[in-house]
Length: 363
Image 1: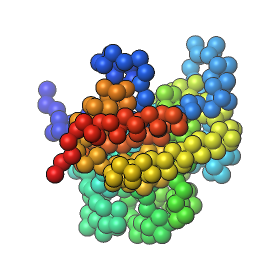
Image 2: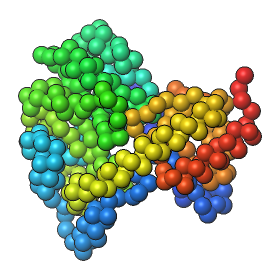
Image 3: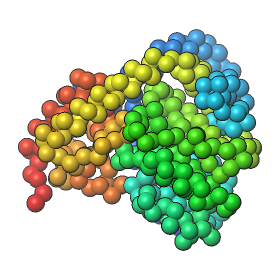
């Protein structure tokens, strides 16, 4: 049977290398994984307790209305209940937004070096992808407004850790007013941003407007294995989203864990402190190693190995350290390192220094 070229040309998303696979390949017992921007503290103790208490009821289907999640998030984030939607990770939210708003031949606009899920979901729904530099988003939209239905803005961005500031956010929103387009701010790393001029797009949210904000509980909240993402969106977007999403798209353990995690403010504070301390440590070490790097508003750092990054990555694997290659994002000499526990950060940088001496620098 015929398959559309959009699907045939898709490059599958390649996640970070699992610990178990590395152990099998190299016969190692101790592995440090700093590849997938996970929270090294694990889930909040309150979330873990809630999960334990909910295990006995897992023969029952989860709440399809997400009632308790909506109540809790509405109160915590100061958002109207009718403006909240939840998905099986933010990946599902991205995919369904493309399905709702994009018809074949239309387009999604995003920035260069952005999360691959935007491109995959757009192509899977037979839409084109247009990319621009962050400073050129408005101009690029104006040139392609007849086609563009969604603008995905990762803020902060993965894998670069870069961001657009308050003025840029406001200008972008103002530039599309009244147009047939939604601006979707993916704020997966929102909790880690500490730039003085960073601001969440929630500050400009209008229940009848054109702004959607995506959040995830996989990163700062440490619930990556449970898969739950949230969306703040206009009334009409949430209405149509709830018509097409699967009724049990967020499992019961994810729901109870999310509700509990949002109550644990001390855990979030500890997560931020560990992350920011880890970032500053990385910056110091990369400067000592004379490796260029991107200052990050996420819980990771993208750095230039000055070598074939694939060889550095493989050298690190042999020493039990998993980082993230990013050649698929256009960075063949770079690796991304997530912030871990202090001991993990130190061991990873010690291993990196050894590997750098083993792999010749490009000239």
